[in-house]
Length: 152
Image (cartoon, rainbow, N blue to C red; front, side):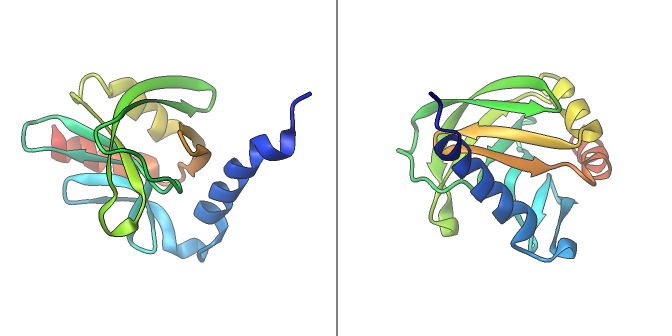
């Protein structure tokens, strides 16, 4: 028998934190400088993409409550409206956030399908070592259009 409560508890907790813990106006998809992603109270969290100086893109998965060994590699499934994308990501210190981040680096062309899905989707589900969490995609189309223009 599957214990639904324990399976979904991390998902619901993170989803609630991302989607309802702050006023609606404080949560949105933003493009700022070379980064685009979900912001809560002006800080990127959950899922963000950043252009690097080497011309690649960093996908940063953050906002989950775990400290992971820096440099360790994890497979991160990201599902957008039923379409799954799998990424190998390395753990790094989350800086002032007190939790780890997972980072995958790829070329812009490799991420084309993901960017299209994020821009047209309603929600993304990310599975981290600490559990699953949801990222709302309202406003992602405009932010990702700006991101693509800036990153080429």
